[in-house]
Image (cartoon, rainbow, N blue to C red):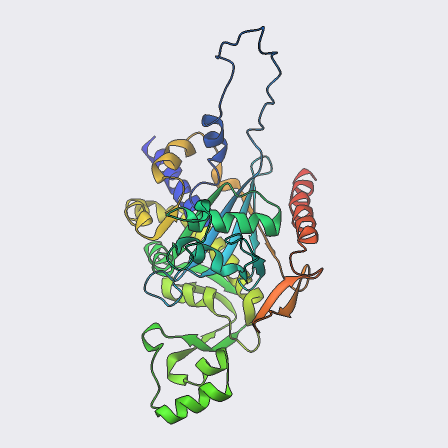
Length: 377
């Protein structure tokens, strides 16, 4: 009995690590929060009873996953990782949908249109001083999650039920506590421009005149890359790699490889790391680590559901380890195209044009329906 309870807790933590702690328990949460009218007394002369639609307790649920640097990093709450975990309870399927951080969106924070890269939504929602004109629902402690949810629904057409954010230190700590994770690297690659946090302002021995010349003749990332001491070169061999937290973080964040760089390749690597975390957290090896993981979890993770609620509810959900993982990414191979914003930023946008989200909605719907069809075969 004790072993069974430990496995249940281990499974719950695996769910937390993969999708923000709640994906297999939303049915019970939703049911418990329903307002029922069956016990209320109405005056028949005033009210004509109407059938109350029965909510589907197994309706798919969506959890938004955000990864960011945290308070000790420049732009600490700009989202490096943006994913939706769509959970199909009937088919026991989780679909991870990756959204590139350079996607150009209209943030509903002012009377006039306010366009930005989507990775700024969470940060702007948290920043009340910098954006005092924001509507109330996008301000305060819930502002970051609320703004991110609104924009993600605008892009994907999917309602977001819950949101989970984790910073880099939490990512490293969780993986180290698990004893590392096994990740398959499909292609060997180098990234010569992986940033070193403690060197971000280092002038690398350049004089003030040299710095001024660089800033006058170059722009954007080319300015930063002129200071070589601010970066380390990453190298990953092809094949299975056992990665500790720091290595897994570098693998998931790398985006400047000449051969496998950019946000699209990074999205695939992030999905692979999440799959590896899921597999490790569900393994018997992880069971002795459960108390330590529980004590660490809320130091690094921000979410809108409590661990206590999840652990209480997850006991009602059998066979949690049977859920399969599918990955989808929004890229220029399907629904996006490259562009340049009015202020000169390199951006991504729908192929039909800025703010034209309908084909993206249809693409995602088709991918999720394909999951249903495959499961029925």
